[in-house]
Image (cartoon, rainbow, N blue to C red; front, side, top):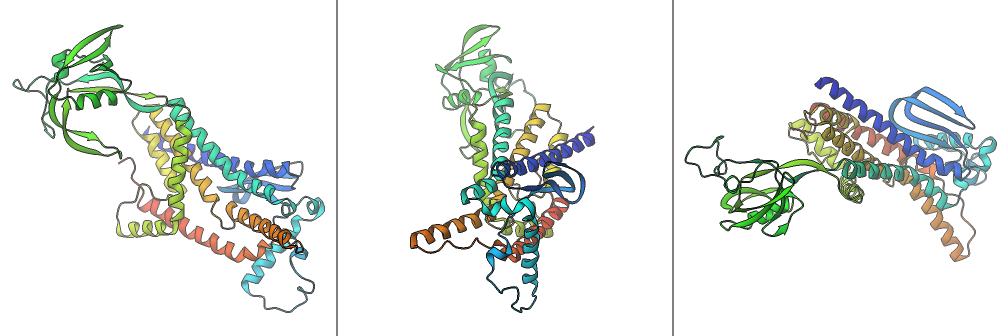
Length: 437
């Protein structure tokens, strides 16, 4: 059953990734068609085509490797004639590697401008429309992440210690004690002595209404050796009990999410943990907060991948907040699905993982390097700035920016991404991140 659950988790991750990629490309496709750009292909994946069907002028399909996607728009770059001066082709030149790459890119781009593509090209659009098209994909991932986090926080809820008492200690045991049962001479816990029972719902503590167990605990911890009234609801009726917390050494939560040891008031009861739906804005806030964290990771990606390689070679533990490959994400999805926890816990974990994946896609695609969406945005904005400067200085409108000249840099970026991706895949196989122990 555990193996089956692990496989189901991996399948859910793969399907979720495919859906995320598909929606990302829809984010490009919809505005492109709305602005009249000819879109020849809409493909999910890379490599050989597994299935495709032409609808109107666009071929929709799936390719063998579901690790990305793309849409093919007419005229992503200006035609060769619009970016080169007369006589350039006749001028002799050495066919260096980079020049060959540039010419191949121009030739492929020119082919998309044949037929009706000549008047419906991407490069002919105003700058703001090109930016909208290129930002549409990442924006779709951000919206999907916000929806997933909203479902997780407000639809399912966050596990919270509620005001319902789960258990009451019979006695007070010293902190760190290995003793598991009460001896005859052990003092009764203040909660037991006061008559608090499992199932009681805390209404107020020391005259202060409480909505969470954390609020009740905070009051109790600040009231050692002082009798305080505790109102509980039991069987539909309210009762007032008097509890005197004892001073005991206990672990308490700190503001940064950790724990520390301190002497505080203690009564010896625990809370029932349940999923409590949060306000609708908590999910989007969590998504945006995580976006900021991912920006920090992406900004330092080469250094973090290098550190991951060092950790893998030396056998050191991986940083749980470090980068992952799709293999590592799939492994975590399998572990989440295979944990022996209630189904809601696993569903919430999968939503968190898929939401985080979409945030990573959003941030990564905004990196201002070709062939990523952010690179195309930078090219469009640069052309817009050149046009504005020409108008301000009374000069002739400049030629369209020839982004094919950046093709060599694009290849270098792609090679770098392949190397980093391969490093992360190897690390995720040999030295995987341990999130679940």
